[in-house]
Image (tube, rainbow, N blue to C red; front, side, top):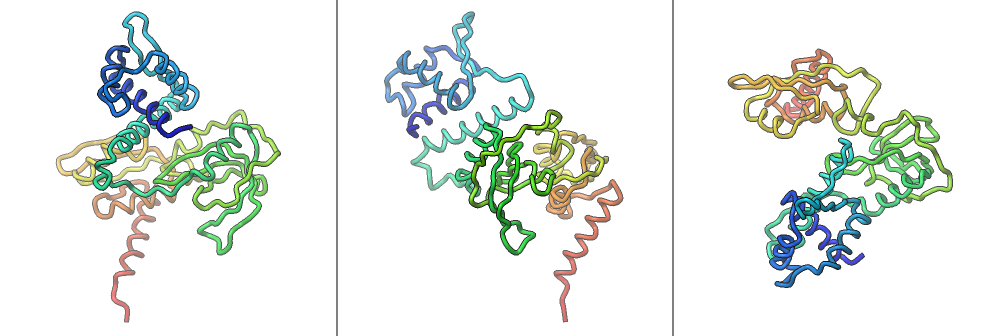
Length: 301
């Protein structure tokens, strides 16, 4: 599909979402002021074609309120779908702003994200068909790539700029996580599979931070954060279970999570601005890693 058409879709969705609800007349006025309109209104037939295209291509429905004669974005009632749709709307809004800001290209600095365009569409297609995928994988833990890996792709997840596919490894007979940037030669197999009825993707990492998990029971994790760091944790919580107890110069944050590798790495990244209070085993692990780091800076004879 032409890039210009997608850009128009983004503009229409973003405009309606920002206004909450909008009449055709008001949408026309804004269209005339945009780079797409160049002073001309959006033809009614074109609007309805775009509306259908947005539903088919982006999965976003633009509904009409006959009582107010306004259009609005229909949001799905489920939490997972709402988060997915909000992420899509936010991404499209930013994409739209960047697309129409070529004159400021040197002043808009973007963070590098390894491309997932090569394999993400293949994996999504395999999930849609409930077909297995086969690929070669270069794990950071292995010296050589491992070929012939076959998994039943259950779902995909993005974390810290990287896309991951989570699925049942047919050979190892357990669910594993694979980073798309380390995959090669991904193909869809003729072999189909059925998603387990009791498997809920949203629940798989529900008790974890990041994309690593384990069989441990979730525990109450408590950290102490300096007042400045507390503001960052308040703005971007580590986990939905986050609770805060505010003091004059610090805050106490508590969570119900599993003690995972990603969580420990995140806590260590905050350096001296936070202190792990509970549980004792997590505190000991953090102290041990900090001591190892300190050893790296000690002068060696």
